[in-house]
Amino acid sequence: MKSQVLPKGLYCENFNDQQTAMCLGIPMQIVEIDGYNARCTSKGVMREVSLFMLQDEPIAVDDFVMVHVGYALQKMTEQEARSTWELLDEMLAYDPDMQGT
Amino acid sequence: MMLTAKDWLEKIRALPLVRRVRIMNVCGGHERSITMAGLRGALPQNVELIPGPGCPVCVCPEEDVYHAIQLALHARVILVAFGDMLRVPVNVPKTEPRSLEQAKASGADIRPISSPQEAVRIARENPGRQVVFFVAGFETTTAPVAAMLLEGIPDNLFLLLSCRLTWPAVAMLLDSGKPGFDALIAPGHVATVMGPEEWAFVVEQHAIPAAVAGFAPVSLLAAIYSVLRQLLEDECFLDNCYPEVVRPGGNRSAQAQLVQAMRVTDANWRGIGIIPASGFALASRFERHDARKHFGGFEVEGRKRVGEMPAGCDCARVVLGKIYPNECKLFGTACTPRTPIGPCMVSDEGACRIWRASGVKVPSATA
Image (cartoon, rainbow over all chains, first blue to last red; front, side, top):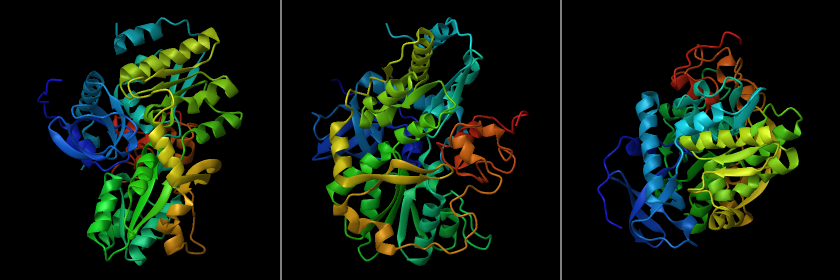
């Protein structure tokens, strides 16, 4: 797959740093894998993500995963990741009150 | 061809609905998408979308929040928790800290975190301190906590668990004989982890239409269309409208990890009471990390309104979907996101907070 520069969005900073256990989840793309730990990116923001819950799945760099509280819950396609990113952008644009503190 | 949200709305509007249909969701993320996308206003008038028990912070026992506050104040631990737990008020005299946030302001070492891995990091960085991870969550949060335990945690990390399973609350509502809904939207990421099959009982035992949905309006509308169609055709099945991440059987590694690290136990839900086999406790191999066993209790005899919602607060009925948030007389008046009284106004997954943030300002005229 061609590597792409993803536009930087608001939500990643906000959703990741908002420190809630909300079930929404954030799609992220894997950049680097070291054992069960991965470095993942979502619109230019890097995070450490655990792949421990996906240990029986074949996982590779460039794959997209749904991340919740720092853990990848499931693999997803790039298209699915992009449509979820759009949704998160819309939600933050709509609701400034929810944009962390 | 992929249908858009607009296409689904048109399909819903074309359905020959004659009677009122109440569709419950049990996920704060769903409620947030429904409210923010304005789905209620876009759907036919006789389709009602009801927020149900979908907020783990809202149902976290008041006693557990009180316990966490006392541990932070008196046991000199570092207390870590997801951010929205910090503002949940408990029932104490005005002279005492009413929330973890207030305890922090009065000097307790309380740190908001966004991942179980941060709890591990903080414990490793502070080997001379005891660290308590206070965690309320459904399966989507409990499974990562199980993964954290199995990966190995330091001896100085303890857990104050208030984790719950989602489906038993729905089973309890259905078994009550007055569930208050005609169809169910099942939670997308719970089903991602646990498998959609967990929700088959709704269809098979109660003949209530059900569909698993994701968080985009298009997925929610597909699920709404599915359950309405099931009702009209009088043929129920469990639909999956979030196949992107919800696979048959769910995430089996995560389920195996939950079984290894946790056991299922009867559990108290704030405002609801004990629901059988609806909570998680640490498996015996991790019992030495159980904060309840290690530190013991701090409950004061005679504390007023132990375990209850605050006076005048209708969160208990909001959580069960018996009333809408703006039917509580405190909604938007005494109780706001900045000055929350009940837990449903605190959490980002609480229906009251979601409704208020979306612009519902005051109690409804019919309340």
